[in-house]
Amino acid sequence: MSAVIETKKLTKFYGKSRGIIDVDLSVNEGEIFGFIGPNGAGKSTTIRTLLGLIFKTSGEARVFGMDCERETEKILRNVGYLPSEVFYYDRMRAIDLLNYSASFYGKDCTKRIKELSAALELDLGKRVEDMSLGNKKKVGIVQGLLHSPDLIILDEPTSGLDPLMQKTFFELIKRENERGVTVLFSSHILSEVQRICDRVAIIREGRILETKRISQLQENAYKKVSFTVKPGSDVRGFSVPGGGKFEVSGQSVSFIYRGDCNLLLSAIGKYPVLNVDISDPPLEEIFLHYYEEGGGASEHPAV
Amino acid sequence: MNIIRRELKTNLKPFAFWTAGLFILTFVGMTKYLGVGAEGVDLNAISDRFPRVILAFIGMADADTRTLSGFYAVIAYFAAICVSLYSLSLGFNAVSREAADKTYEFLFTKPRKRRDILSAKLGAAVILITLFNLLNCVFPLAAASALGFREDISREVLLFYAAAYLVSMLFFSISVLLSVLAREAEQGARRANLVFVFAFVMGVVCDTLENPGALRLLSPLRYFATSELLSGRLSPSYAALCILLTVATGALAIRLFERKDLTAA
View (tube, each protein chain N blue to C red):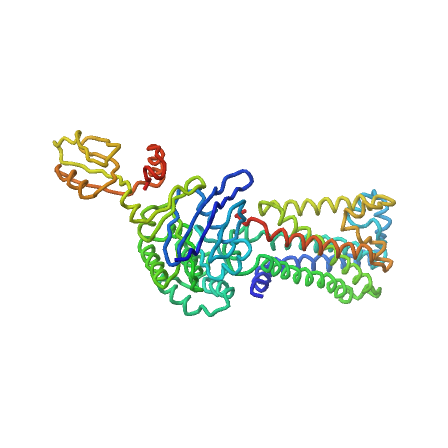
């Protein structure tokens, strides 16, 4: 399987400020690759370097085997990009903007624009300036996909989309992926990446901490667990192997857990439970935990 | 072609605004001459009472305002400032508008070379500057004809038009270069405006000196002196210098833009 995106020791400094340091990425053809990290970690810097918007300080960046700085034009012919924040020419109607976008690819995208707009319930006759953030994002999705690119780069794509539209969006991306399109999906929301990606790279403070398969990630993922028991029950002695940071408050217990979910449920099931909540911890918490354990990536996987 | 068309469309409203300003400046100015002539006012006698620095400031240092051509020279001075300022704004917009409006991620992730995108934007701006300068030539001729002046000023109008065109193109390319060099979009506009103010002040200084010599090089607004233009001469050496600086500055700007990090303003 050939690499569609490949970076080696890719480094970018903005003057003296850190952008990314020694980023090694390899995204294979046909996969949905998650790129996850907190805000300011270097996700957008990496993406902008790949797109030729900014220039690397050192290292290598290649897309479709081509150099990102010398062959940007050729690369961009087959790349669809959706930025985290979408800004378009306000006075343009959505359809005019999309036709303008299509004019750069030298192919008829009319049918595709109609299909995508219908799927996303986008009003093409509306002016961009009159649109909500969510609708502008929809315009962004259509303009990123209208030329049927071989690589889609999504930088925090779901912000501004309501849950139903997020579902439609993920279905669209999966459909694109099924026809062989490679997807680089950047996000700071772990569950989003887990939902759609095959592999994931974790970036923090400009450096890649780890790259692993989503299945491995889920095996090792910490969950935030809390449950409440009926009044009169004593939960002070609650413990479960794989759990940590137990906090008991009245009839409620909260803790983090990594391990077999069945063991967790049977441990909780010994109590007269009123309510259980199991969720992904925020990314920052995962990273914090990662460093607290102090073992580094290989010893104690963060997620 | 699509970029040029879009740029022209976007800049249509400001163009109309600047055109209206130029029209008012020219027609009101020319009408004023009609009024002054009818009332028998000797503007030279009035202007002689002012210090030369004030006259230089308002473009009357070398103009004999008793004649239509001399009076027109004062209007042409303000028109030259007008076209230069318009050119500065076009230069800044061509380079920095997308960054300031944060639309650069849309345009510069399209399969076009950066050089081609910027060249298209500059091309559209040059079209507008050329049109604006043509109007700067047409308006005074139309005003002179409409107001029924007997003195033929077509030669002066053409010479002042050519001078203003050359100078405005130079200011345009300076603005483009400064915008490319600036880290933030607004910074480029500020610097370009400062350069213009400096050139203007140096122009006033040149006009107050008997022999400004090399100082004239620092003020494109005085590359083509009013007295020379009124005597029917457009300095070929300064015309060549203008063209050379415009081309060199523009080419350098495009080259530097190819390696510029594109980020939001």
